[in-house]
Image 1 (cartoon, rainbow, N blue to C red):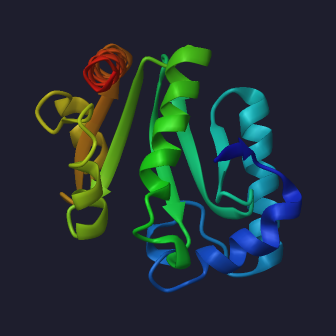
Image 2: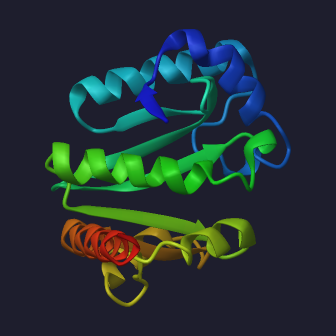
Length: 185
């Protein structure tokens, strides 16, 4: 589902990111495959410096279908950016990728807070975020972060996932699964 980014994935990921339904929502935009290669190389360097964590989202055949990143990492927090290629819309990959990424960030790294900014005009992402029970609407919870992401004009809504809230969600889900298994047996 997730793997470390690799340069050989560039042609496939560039093609997927170039689709008109995807391109507007890609954080690291490239006009050419060469430019995408250069951006990917920069992302890998940023990961080496600890300011970014970047993963490739794969399908069940381990083929690249999108990317997920935590960028602007500072004080054990960062911002989430993710995109999935158009052929993979609506197939559940986005939620599975996010949950695998959150597991890695919260339980295998020092990350405590994940911020998500979504354009108020991006209905698809706003609908998707409401399906995640561990996400909190954060425009008023973190007013300084909200003001910072909307410096020029009010374009984004802010959401947050904390390690504490995510951990509680995971524990609650595991208890529910055990209880369901006991009822079945």
